[in-house]
Every structure is written in structure tokens, then in C-alpha cells.
Length: 124
Image 1: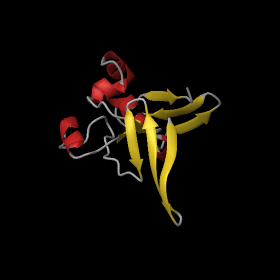
Image 2: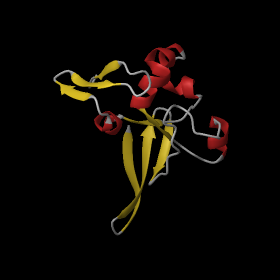
Image 3: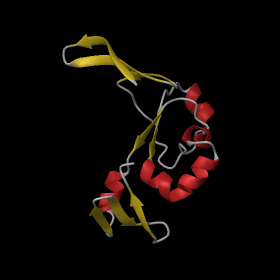
Image 4: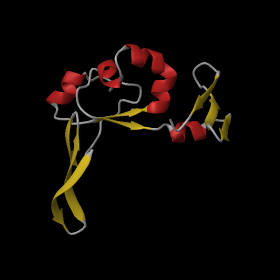
């Protein structure tokens, strides 16, 4: 990833983030694809509307559909049918908001809101 400032006006600045999957002009508004899809809009719709990047949530994706499903699809980009950059939120807020959460040396251990099972998320 690379960032460069394109223009300044006082404290405001126009920038460009460069990724292997494309460039994103900042500041940027990101459509929310929490669970891997933007409601009511296809990837083609988002591209037609000019969106350069979408936002997904690692916690929700890891719970449903799960890492095995995403891996079987070839990764997050093919799973989402999205060719451009994806920003993923760690899901830390959701995990800390859960009633049954423990922080251990290895990571966070929490009870899933979906199936009630215990899960662990690590920095890896």
C-alpha cells in the first residue's frame, strides 16, 4: 500500500491510496458490506456508481459464512465478486460488545451470537 497527498487546502488534503487491486481517492465514502455483500446492490452496480473500495467486517465474515467457505471460494475478493480493494474492520468492537468474552494471551475468546459456540480470534 502507498499513500500520496495530491492537494492541500489548510488542514484538508486530497490523497490517493494505491493497492495491488486499484487506487482509492481520499477522503472516501465506503459502502458497507459487513457480511460480504452490500444490501440491494451488486458489485456491478457499485462499480457503475464509481465506488473504489468497500468495507467488510472480519468478525461477521468469520462467523458467517465462515473462513472455510471464503477460502473455498478462493478468498474474499472472489467470494464477494469484488475486483477492487476491500477494507476489513477487525470486528474488535463486536467482540468486546459480547457478553461472554475473555481476553487471553493468545487472543480473544468469545461466544458466537449465531450458534452459541465458543470461538477464538488471534492477532494472526
